[in-house]
Structures are given as structure tokens and as C-alpha cells.
Length: 367
Image (cartoon, rainbow, N blue to C red; front, side, top):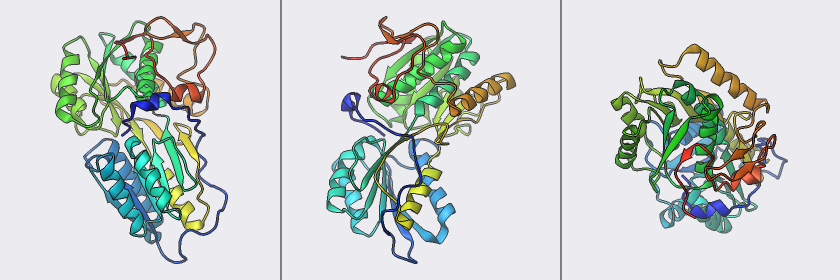
């Protein structure tokens, strides 16, 4: 997914997605299908980060039919291996290549220099080029909504969070989840375990089990497998699914899922190559753009809680609710420093550079 800790220092400025761009000349040969390539950082599993991107690829095929031909390569390590795969796709006639992992950003840029006529989509990256777009989703919006559900469902008021790396996106998620919980239970706390890996099912499971031994009765995670959900099902606890709906893994454990929806975005970008309107941009979309969705409630969740969460989701989509806006009291970090003044909201630039943990999170970040 996104592995470079230097991302905490990124001063990127993302715009909301605009899927129709100004015409730039024809990129696709008349009558021939657009060749679109996809590079995946892990195997395509039943659920998770890679699964959602592959669902996006399938959506492109469903929408465009014979007008597109897609190729994917799975389980590609970030670094030299990624560059080799991306270069091979570019050299074999692919007109647009999607690279959904932060660690693919630099290899993508390097290959893009050598193939100026090929379009590249660096998903979760932040560096653009004339033929490289960056795109990401406001995952934190879904995290806040999941926090509301967790706050309503938890009996102990103690949640767990199994996290990969302390990069801004993960910190946004932890903080938004905590703020969501504390919006309905001001005393709620969140215990975090850092794994320093994105995809390691045994390690993810062990972290979840350790948290369940510390009064945690509901758990969230930012990792790549279903292991945390499976652990919650095994222990009779509750969990928030991430990336995908995971009710097949945790039919009793799942209370809600935060899912990423890439199909419309991918389809429009391929269509832009087809009609010659593709151009480089910085794109950042969330609930409003349909890129983030919360739902897929489990059987434990009362109708009233479901309705509360869905109403909050509607408010976020309408711009009436912002997870990183303070109410009458300021928002402080867990070391007591004021981070959001009363009545104020963080800017996108501040959110993208987030390097602190909100009050209510147990633990510290290495400085």
C-alpha cells in the first residue's frame, strides 16, 4: 500500500476528483481497445486492498466491454521488481497503467520518463508528471463513521487498532476513528499496535489477540488481509472491516465495513484515454465522490445505530460534517497540545501532513 515514512513530510495539495478533463488529443487508435494495465502489491485475496482494486478493474471491463483490454500482475514487491513490471507493461503497448501502492510511486515516475506517450495513475502517490496523475481517497471519512458505530457497540469503551506504518494516511484513520468513537462516548480510548508491515496475516492475528486480552471488545485495522476480522470472529469480539466487506470471514464479528470504490474512477480515466481527454491531475475524493462507502452492517448492529451512521455518512457527503473540525472545544493530541482550535477545521494540507495522535489514543509516535 504506502510504505514510505517520508510521506509524513509531504506538502502535497490534492483536489477533489474531476473525472472529465479538457481534451488533449487522441491517445487511443480509432476502433482499437484501450490496453489498461494494473499492478498489485499483494495477491488477489477474498477481501482487502488488492481485492478492491481488482474489483475496479473488473468494473472497467463491465462498463467498456470490447473497448478495453485489461492486464494485471499481482504480488509485485515495491522497488526494483515494481519498476520491471511497470516497464514491461509500458513496453507491450499498454496505454494507461494503474499502480495502486505508495511504494510504486518512484518506479512509476521513472518508467513514465521513458514512455511519455503512456499514461500512468499513481494511486496514493503524491508526485505528478505530464503523463502521471496521482489519486487517493479520503479514507478517514469512513474511519470516522466506523468510529461512531464502534462507540455505540462497545461495552468496555476500549477499541483496538492494528496498524501497518505510522504514515499520515494511517494516522488520519486512527484519529478519525477515535474522534468518531468519542463523539458518542467521550471517554472511549483506542489502543494501537504497530506492525511495520502491510500484509502479514499471522502477525496481524497475533496483534489482534493481544489487544483482545486488554479489554478491547471492538477492533479496527489498517493492514492487507482478513486476519484481524478472523481473530475477532474466533474470540467472539467485534470488528470494523477495511477495504472490503468481510462478512464471509466474520459473519458475527463484523459490525460495519469501510469500503473503497475504484470502479467509476478507473472507468472514467480509461475512457479519458480513449477519447483523448486524459491529463495529469491531483485527485482526492471521498464519500461525496463515491470513492468511500460505509455500510455492510453485521447482525449485531441495531437499526437505530445503522441509521445514525448512515445519516452521518449523508452529512459528510453533503459537506455538513467534517471529521477534522472541532466543536465548541478544541481538539488536542494525546500529549495535550491543541491541534484544532475550537470551531476550526484542518486544511487538506494539514490533514495530508498529519503526524500526531489525537486525545484518546493510547501510545506515542517515535519522533
